Amino acid sequence: TERPSGAANYQLIYLADGKAHFKINGKVQILEKGSCVLFHPGEPQFYYYYLEEHPDIYWVHFSCNTNNLFLSQTGWGIENIYQVGVHNSYIHLFDGIIQELQLKQPLCEEQLKLMMQQLLLRMGRNRIKADKVFENYNREVEEALRIFHLSSEQDFTIKKFTKERGLNYYRFIDTFTKQVGISPRQYIINIRMSTAKELLTNPLFQVSEVAQLTGYD
Image 1 (cartoon, rainbow, N blue to C red):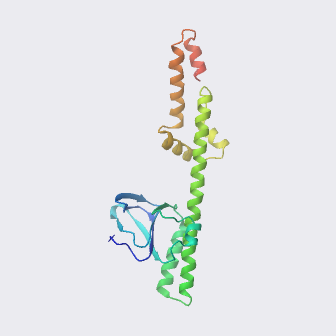
Image 2: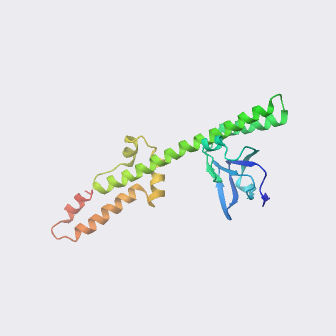
Image 3: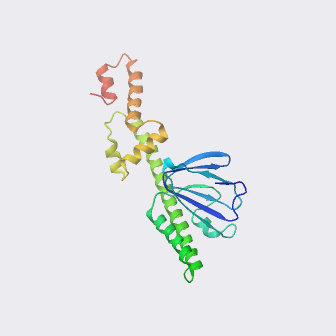
């Protein structure tokens, strides 16, 4: 799809599965399932799909006033790309909108308006919730770094650390690795090795003492 002058209304595109390619502000970005693109009126639209990437795409055009309060209240700003997650409720609403447009029953316009608002609200709510979870995990990574440096000689169990804080073990490791560049276990090992190298240069310490101070038998 190529619309250099964009559309006269808003267009919301949701990736239920697979991948899609969007050119936003001159840069091509590959988006995956759970992503959502909101084109504002008059914004250039360039996007394409490859069949082998199994794209499952839903989209809807809608109109509303500029600086619409409902849009801003539900977390939709001037950005184009949003991460709203994978939820079956989105598909049900899209299917419902399609059905309403096909059947055109009495009060169709009012029903479509309510369903569109519900879709935007659910996506906005899930996005806000996801952001809060992301912030929480970032804070926990900072706390882990502090603890690791203070007590690197302790035999840390990452599973115990996450369980005590009510965190998802795999998500914590993924967040830590993305933020720090290495896994929590490797980070602890690096601290121990750095401390050991420093202590081993001191003739007052025996190798066994250095091992004990850095958490090794």
